[in-house]
Amino acid sequence: MSGDVGPQPGLEVRHRRYIPYAHAHYAGHLVDGAYSLGLFGDVATEMCIRTDGDEGLFASYEDVQFLAPVRAGDVVDVRCVLESAGRRSRRLSFTVTVVARGAPTPERPGAARLLDDPVVATTAVGTVVVPG
Image 1 (spheres, rainbow, N blue to C red):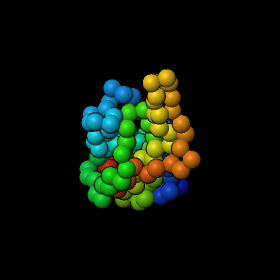
Image 2: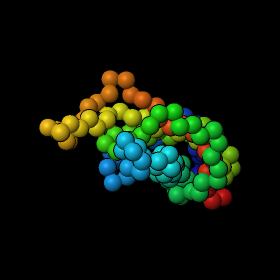
Image 3: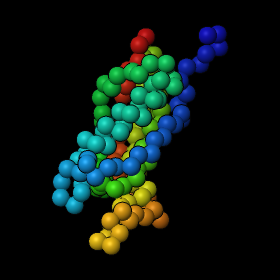
């Protein structure tokens, strides 16, 4: 395409996801950290489709931080931002933020609440590659 300037840093992709109780792995309905990494893969795939018309491939992660628990019954906002773009590589930043949390009681097993102060649970930086 004439005049195509390529992928522009700052482009953002977001997904919201409810974490089902079937995904709880540990006591207290905790979900393992790999769950967040899987969510990062999903938003990275959409980013690659948007920027390059291809699903792309993950090459590496750096600086993965597990800052707060993710639990079954949570609703999370997963954010991916294009930080920089090379010829075939894309450097992306990721965040999982808990925006709602299950709050079951014996009387109301499906009770949940929106969080007044969403909690940043996981952050990372990753590199994906796309076809040349």
